Amino acid sequence: GAVVSQHPSRVICKSGTSVKIECRSLDFQATTMFWYRQFPKKSLMLMATSNEGSKATYEQGVEKDKFLINHASLTLSTLTVTSAHPEDSSFYICSASFGLAGSDTQYFGPGTRLTVL
Amino acid sequence: AQKITQTQPGMFVQEKEAVTLDCTYDTSDPSYGLFWYKQPSSGEMIFLIYQGSYDQQNATEGRYSLNFQKARKSANLVISASQLGDSAMYFCAMSVGGTSYGKLTFGQGTILTVHP
View 1: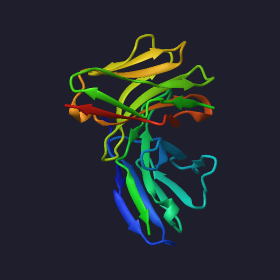
View 2 (view 1 turned 45 degrees about the vertical axis):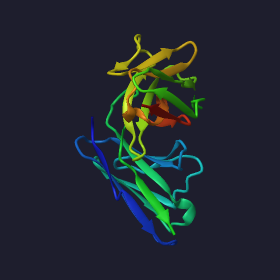
View 3 (view 1 turned 90 degrees about the vertical axis):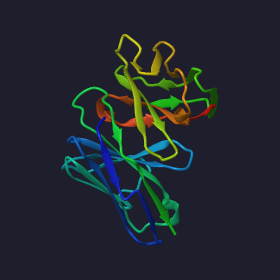
View 4 (view 1 turned 45 degrees about the horizontal axis):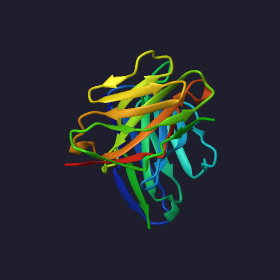
């Protein structure tokens, strides 16, 4: 299957700092990337949809200014958690899709565990 | 709005036995896709199987099969000959067409434990 990588896999930061998470599709060009957030033993909640070259579309309740998403190329999307606070601690997962029509498969990155002290 | 429901928080199965994980869905869009993902303790999401709403036959992928009952809006995952490595969290998910194309809505998940 297609490979999606995320970096870093784990990050610990102090409250008030910003953290950038990278999501890369390694062997295909991803027209769309998605960012999810997952709390322990809970389901994945979609945060935003990222399309290359355009602004991200955020889900209701997700703060655009706090979770900055940039999709600079067809293989890279970044999520920046600005002024992180302990409540932002979570597992962040990206996925990439390259389908043109229909409901195509998304391939997920390995996730990034963010801990804000 | 789309909704996915997994009513089994946890399931137990004996090694080499088959197990069915339940999933029901709700959408008014006639075009949709149903997915099952496995999430081991490492956290990665592993794609298992896909069923399109217009597919006539149930999807199968090795030991995984999807029991698609459109009228009942159910998409249960059947794992045959369970292995210890199948112990993980399993998520059912749905994607619909239109402006929501590609966005996945996930169920609550089912933790499967395979006993030796």
